[in-house]
Length: 583
Image (tube, rainbow, N blue to C red):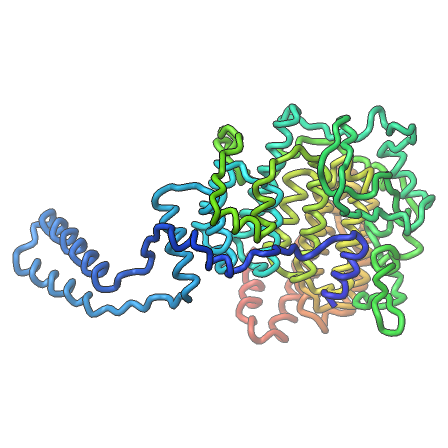
């Protein structure tokens, strides 16, 4: 299912995934260059190293003994115990000949602090063998900076490595470092003040051709149903020269459609409630086959209903606030780059192309591209491309922590959902909600998607919109009744309800209200009560609601029911009951 969906996504956005590294293989090791390099033994010498550590430990114990005024007998006894350490056996990790050879080469480069293109080549091969080798990644970053190698090319290499081992945290950290480094270098290089970057892709709300593409007008089109689903941004990634609207100079980046795109007006895709025409796990198909051409266009595939096509002014306000501009680095995560990274004079250091090195470079396009100059790029297009490739990574493993963490970091660090260029040209907001809803439809039990949905709603300030929250509550209610054993959706649902209740409190200017007097909360309670005998998740959900409202008798009844039916945790529920009774 994931592979078929990924192929549909790749076709829709014209992406080449995964990255390929032509010529990057271990046949390069036959080159005489590697045999002439110095090597360092990195394997533990069991006999000598242990003996050295034993003697060192003897001296430490003797020193401690002097401080404690130990007598000679105690010292001799301590030494006898230490001598017993000689009998400890250490099993070295088995390394293949290639691993042993490459690790010893890299260890020599690191020890001697030699940052050369030859070392960069060795680190590439080492990482291909072991993508979790921290020292190789750190050495690689130093080579990139000191030699001013091509950072975009190295990002392609990192994506290639990640596709091969998607759970390698070290690879993901390097990818973050590259993205942030490329961003900062381009922002500083373009003379734009980093403390406040207003990503302006239009001038007074107009393109050069005079078409009005102001964000509010664009949102109106989305809301009012003037545009077709087929107008969803295609996001083509064909190589070419992209003209940056903020600058007259062309930039060499992957270009997509030059014309701004609009999308389907069905804003139900943002907060959709299924009309229950089909099950959330199904995907529109023809003769049992997924229709890749329309799977990402037709929002009937994404939990929407015709009832939700109507729009309200609060929806527009929420969407407009979602497109407000802030400093992309102001409230992001901790930086992966240090200021010292940018203090190095970025002049291309000469690489001496002697015959052996030249033959390696000529036989591998990756190393040839690494020597290209770092050109100024359209940073918004660059971020969008990284965003799309990260989405592809999630298709490979929909529950991989690193993939979702990188996606969250991208959105938060660079304020992608509030980027005017991306909102206008690619309508990244609708793209993201369709993406989220698609994964919920494929696997509604996927907790990672629910957590990310909450994150996006929070970033767009949708939790301050009462009407939006009402629709989200109905969305959750419909699915909790169908999947009443789904712990992930109940965790999400209770936070949405509490947020809605807090908004009602502020509206009434009261600190305490009877939450069951609110019609939608009463509806939730009444409809879910029917399932409390069937589901532990429903009982826990209702107990939290009763606790929040101060209805302790009903809360105790929920825990008594849990104690009766959940024998594995009966002690836990009994303790909860006693705790409430004491209060």
